[in-house]
Length: 370
Image 1 (spheres, rainbow, N blue to C red):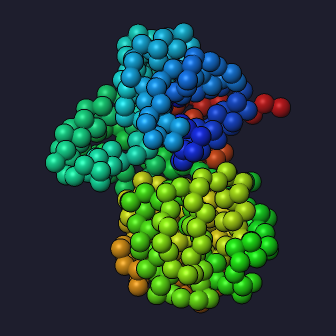
Image 2 (cartoon, one colour):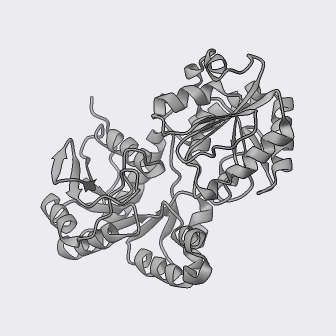
């Protein structure tokens, strides 16, 4: 079976979609009778190791993202590849290119609903456009042979918009990269804080929907010995004394080291479609305090951390103290076991192959090389 993924959500500093596609590409390559091609935007038309760059102009201030504006180059690559199945990873031009290729090649197309487009638009432009965006999502995703959503919350939103054939397919985490063995006892010294400090971490973008002001207020409530490390782009500059900022994108191995060295991950975002960073923390044997909103309730339980009211710094501070009272090491070990059992990339790819075989009409025959 030849599977082609197509998306514009692929850039040097991109997050969950690229992580998903890289993990999938690596694992599908190890399965006999499966070929995987990945079509992503690039400066010029090149290809190597099954990854095809399709020319697209860079987005201004887009941190490496490129925005496809012409259908033909994408359709041409798909027509030449002749895949048995196409998976779409964004709701923009590449999605329509995949549907046009379906018409030409007579192959099924799956849409993976990675991001909540109506919510993204309303956050940036207000609610005026929400009905139009919802109608667009309903029309586009109604055209796919099957739609995958990373969480029940997202699947239910699509179903409310009238989209059929929606299936929940959670994402996974790299259990080797994010691992308690990455713990570094020198991290506190690097940050200039005491060995006895209770170290909290947030890793990701500092965009508005992440609600970082709630984390900063939480740290004001907690005071010392609690200390928060913020890691990622667009972080706030004015922070309390018990907060340290690394205001730049860091590679996964470095994030994994910092994550495993922290006592607890905190996340105040209330619009998450899945929550990959939470899985990365749990895989690092680092428990989680997050808000009871979005998809977090599907991942975090009391054996792995705590959920608290959204947009309530006091409630978050209470949840942090509660986790330390329950024992961060105990909860962290339970969190690691939970992701090992439910969120390995191998199990995710097995689930994906069942979806692919269902729409193509083949029976699953998964055999690893060697």
